[in-house]
Structures are given as structure tokens and as C-alpha cells.
Image 1 (cartoon, helix red, strand yellow):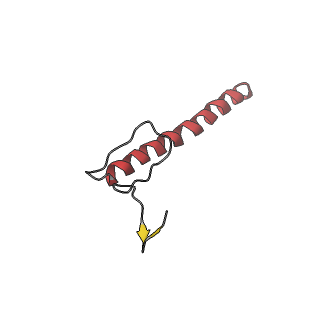
Image 2 (cartoon, helix red, strand yellow):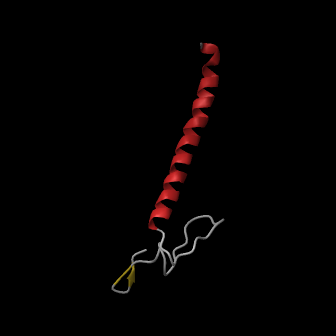
Length: 68
């Protein structure tokens, strides 16, 4: 039993990194698919989020003041 404890710990450490990563990747795709507008475009191979004037992730203004 104690001979394999390091192996079990290593497997658990890998799974604890892999499972949440896949879960949040799936959730992000669902959110984007649900709120994507028909006139918006999807930018691929970027790092981060781009805020545009039109489309799903647009700038919000209140009385001429940017809220973002």
C-alpha cells in the first residue's frame, strides 16, 4: 500500500489539474455559443478577450462614460 502512495499522489495531482481545465473550457464554449449574436464574428488564435464596439462583448457606456 505505502509503496504506491507516491504513484497515487502523482495521478491525483495530474487529474486535479486536468479535470477543472476541461470543465471551464467547456463552460466557456457554452457561454459563447449561448450569447453570440448573429452579426458578430469569432476571432480565433488570440490570447485574452478583445472588446469591440459591436457584437457580444461590446463596450458598455453610461452617459458617455465607459464602464470598462
